[in-house]
Image 1: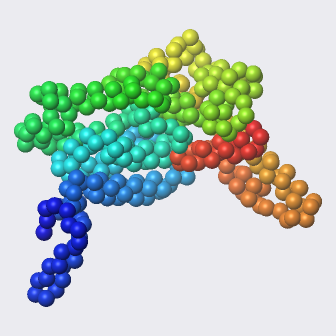
Image 2: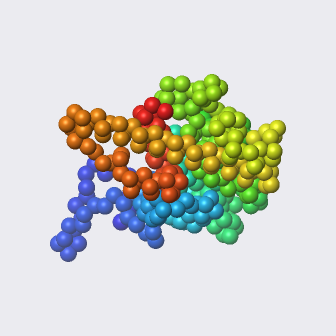
Image 3: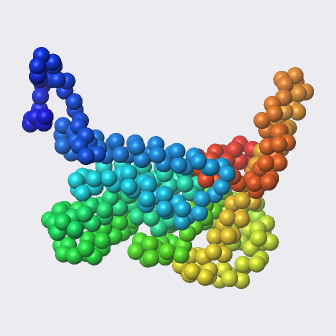
Length: 363
C-alpha cells in the first residue's frame, strides 16, 4: 500500500485483528521503492550488493596472480554493471543528480583501485581515462537508453541525454560530450589529461591495456620521488642523481634502469609519451619499462625494509627485549624473491602501504 503525502505518525491499520506494520521500502521485481519515490534506497542497495560481490571476486587468488586488463574490463562490464545497472530503465534518470552520480562513481573507483593496484590518491576520472573505461553512471544511462530505444520512447531518452537527441548515435555522442566536459573541467588528474585530452580518442585505442606499472606512470601516482613527496612519504622529490624524480625521468632516464631500457630504448627514444601510448606498435615497450621499473623499486624497498627489521631485532636481542620473526623470516624472504617481490600490487591499499614503509625505512 502506497500512501500519498507526509505522515506525522504511523497509521494504525488492522486486518482481521492483526496490525500491519509500516515499511518504508518495498521491493518489486528486484527494484526497491521508497516512500519518496526517488529510488535513493535502490541505488544504495545495489551499490552495497555490488561492493560485496566484487570484494569476494577480487579476493580470490588476489595474491597469487596478476589480472590482465582484458579480464579486469570483463569483470567491470559483466558483473559490476549488471548488478548496479539492474532496472536502469526505471531509475537511471535519477543519475542526472550530481550527488547520486558521484556516489555511483565512488563504487566504481573502489573496485577499479583494487583490481588495478592503483594508488588510493588517484581520482576516478584519471582511472576511467587511463583504462579506457566509461564512467559507471554513464554506462547505466547507456543501458537505459538501449531499453527505451527498443520501446521507441524518445522522450525518456532525451531526459537521460539531451533535448536535441534524435537518433541512438546522437544519444551516445551526448553521453560522450558530457564525459568530455567533466574531464576538461576536472581539477584533478591533469597529468593524465595531458596524455589523453580527448576521451573519444582514448576509448578508440582498444589496443592500450596498461599493466599496473603503466597505470602508475599515466596517473603519475607511483614509486616516483615526485609523487611520494606530494603524499608526504619522503622529504625530497629529487632522484639519487639529483634530478626531480618525475615518472618520465624514473622510467626513461634513470641510470640504474639503463640495462632494463637498453633493448627498447631505440623504439621510445625522441618520441613523446602521448605518441608512444597511441601507437599500437610502441605502447608495449613503455608498458614493459614502467612495469620493470616498478618491480625493481618494489624488490629494493622490501629488501631494505627487511634489512632494517634485522637490525632492529639485533638491537632488541642485545637489550633483552626478545626478537621478532616477522621481518627476519627466511621463508618469507625466499617467497618474496621467488615471486619477484611484487605480489601485492593488485590491491589498492597495498601500494600505498608499501610506499609508507619505504618512507619509514629511510629510502
